[in-house]
Amino acid sequence: MESIFFNIIGISITISFILILLLLLSSYLDERYAVKWRYYIWLILAIRLVVPVDFGLTAPPLELNFSDQEIIYPFGGNLLPQESSLERRTLERGVYTSLNEGMESINDLEDVDAGFSEKQKTTSDTITVSRLALGIYLLGIALFLLWQLGLYFSFQRATKRWYREVSDGKIREILEKVKSEMGIEKQFQIMACRKILSPMIVGLFRPTLLLPHEGYQKIDLEVILKHELVHFKRNDLWYKLLLICANALHWFNPFIYALIREANKDIEISCDEEVLKGADQLLRKRYSERILELMQGNNHQEPPVSTNFNGGKGMLKSRMRNIFDERIKKRGILSFLLILTLILVFSACRIEMGQDKWKIPIAMKTADAYGQDESGSRNSMLSDTDISLPFDLDRDGAMETTFSFLITEEAEACYLKYNGERVKTDRIKVLEGVEHGVVYSLQAANLEDGNSILFLISVDYHSMPFGSGYWEIYSWGDGGFERVDMESVEENLQLKILEPAEIESNTMNAGAAAYLYDRKKYPVDYPVAGLYFKDGFVRGAEKALDGIVYAPLSEYDVEGYQAWGQEAINKTMTGLNFVSGETVEGWIDPSRALLETEEVVFITLPNITASVKRYYQYQDGKWTSVDTYIE
Image (cartoon, rainbow, N blue to C red):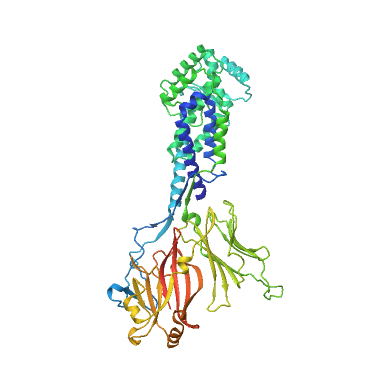
């Protein structure tokens, strides 16, 4: 339902642009083209307004992307914050302080958790901005339709009891004569009603022609009846119903009200034009006099779905000018076809609310690309593999979208593929060929507030020391797949073994430091391993760039360092995964997904010194670390 709502808004914006262009060119178009051209243009635009489907073949002329937000509202109480706490950023085995404060360790970070008692808490629920907007939109439609129905039934109640059969047989004779001349065979009632001020036809399924009185001269009655029968023959009642539906769906757009007003005006003017086709100046003058008489004092709201239309002084002026304009004008077929092509070929503007459309759970699937034979034994050769993740992107309850990691072409190539109903995206080649790992996995998550989906492809080498692998990350939006740069994540952690003098002089120019050992228990000349993070640590609202953690070396490690120098210290990435922000203590947005990296730091293999876990958020094409844990 929300996707239809956003389509309607996009169509409304697009039609508004076309309408503005037509209104700006109206003087030029009126001079060159017959009014019937505009009659059909408004009809095509009205049809487009009530069809909430984008069937254009081009990219949208305008795309508006918004990040959807959740609003918390209470039940039976005042809205209270659910939690208030200081952000915490700690290392599991150490703490840090600014080097400007003398490199002193902080033993305790004060945690302040402020909550509310059970009496203060209130039951609450949430609603997204997009759903709230949809609710307001539907309420607007309901109120608009109730208003139109109220006008219709008010007119019926005020006039129907005054209906009476026309007693003058000449009126029926003239009616049948005009019907015969116009080729109309359908029978309908003709009634007199003294509560109306001008002739009109009412009723979609049982049309009734109403006359204010029976005292018309023959020549006047002929043109009056012909005017109303032109409306009937062209199905203008259904045209006006279409305009009401378009107005109801786009009640929020002032430009659509202008379109409806112009369409109603041109329905009347084109009808005048049809009635007076081939008429002389005398008949045109008499016709205009009758219109003036009928419109005098007719300031009442016209009933919906009727051929009565007032329109005020501007409408009267336009009708008079057109009645006496006998110039031959172009039919405007080519111009009409051009606008029709623009509407059919070019897509409507697109509105996106990221959280609603792209909100998906974190998902992961794995598969052994070697597979198993009929006996259950592992195959010795790679085989074609398909790892698929189905999603309900438009939140309609149906899993209409599938993202897949494929090993195809006789296990010679890897692809990432999208298959869905709304947007067709070609598959993209990944991994630069098949990686002969043991296990492949595909993970998906939102990391950008719902503006795109990130996919993590993993090749897991179980036979490697500590467990290791190879990873690629791709983002997906309406434009297709795009590879995400991982260099800042992979190169964030830098390693170096430091002598005590280098630590004191801060040769790494670190902005913050932490110790994973008690310096008092180590000799003054004892070297240590420095784990240097380019983007530093986060503590509360402050950020210390280029932070460093000092880890102790064993005696065996020191011997390796003395023998091999800096080559004694190494690291390897052992895992990348998407995780929920709830798993990161103190993270300010628990509902948001993060990228978790796990690296093993080791000195003189295989003496493992530390396991480092880092958590990153991805926003606007950049990775930013939000927390670090070292064991």
